[in-house]
Length: 92
Image 1 (spheres, rainbow, N blue to C red):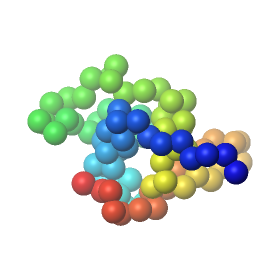
Image 2 (tube, helix red, strand yellow; image 1 turned 180 degrees about the horizontal axis):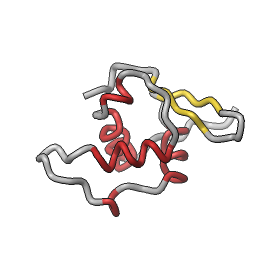
Image 3 (cartoon, rainbow, N blue to C red; image 1 turned 120 degrees about the vertical axis):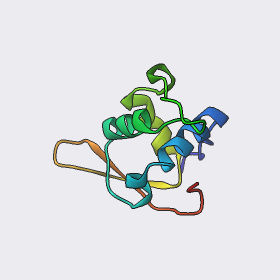
């Protein structure tokens, strides 16, 4: 079994942004592209609009979500990863 890769500080911050979304907290399945949209629509803690350049693309988000223990992945018929939030300990 390969060693578990730990999330960096920046990756933990991005997961935190994603966990602030109501859709994610309710356990509704989403794709990495939908995660990008959710993060884009989540304002900063100060209430400002989030800069799009601060959000990694869907491919990088897939890599981050794979490393996170808070999400589980299934695949749909065309191979797209579908993510579901499985934990509630880290939700803000």
